[in-house]
Amino acid sequence: MHILAKRSAMNYNMQKGISLLEVIIGILFTAIVAMGITKSTIGAEKIAGKTTHNSEAMQIGLEILEQYASIDPQTLDDADDLPETEVTRNNRRYKRAINITINPDRSRSVAVRVKSVSPLINLDFTVEDTFALWGER
Figure 1 (cartoon, rainbow, N blue to C red):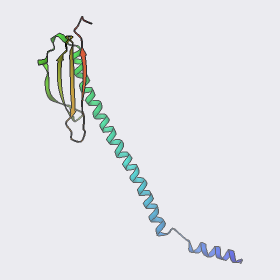
Figure 2 (figure 1 turned 60 degrees about the vertical axis):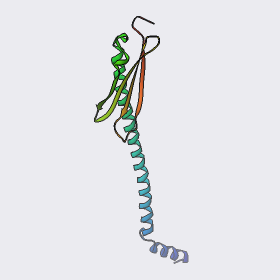
Figure 3 (figure 1 turned 90 degrees about the horizontal axis):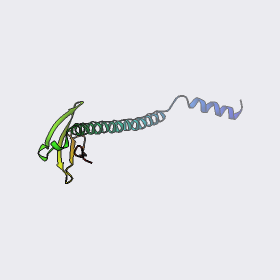
Figure 4 (figure 1 turned 135 degrees about the vertical axis):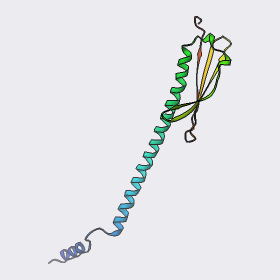
């Protein structure tokens, strides 16, 4: 047998199977990839939850503005303000307050402030619209 062939056969016989170091490196690599995927998934869930909260809160505010749009603005007064009331949507709680302002041109501005009750979601915003008196431009 040729000398190179003998050495090749010896090296082959000595390298049977996978070493412990290779197994540990493989497991470590798999764990790092899994941690990255997990972190991305958790981040996506948080963003989806915040988006859902924002959407529901916006809907709560817009529903009130739509209700006030169907009311004769002349009947609205500063005294019609509503203090914070709690609203629940899909097991999520929000506080809603309504502020009505009579403007110098006699139009009425309605501002609806919506904020989340949950300490995990920092959500606090106001939607507002102005309604001219009916029959006036």
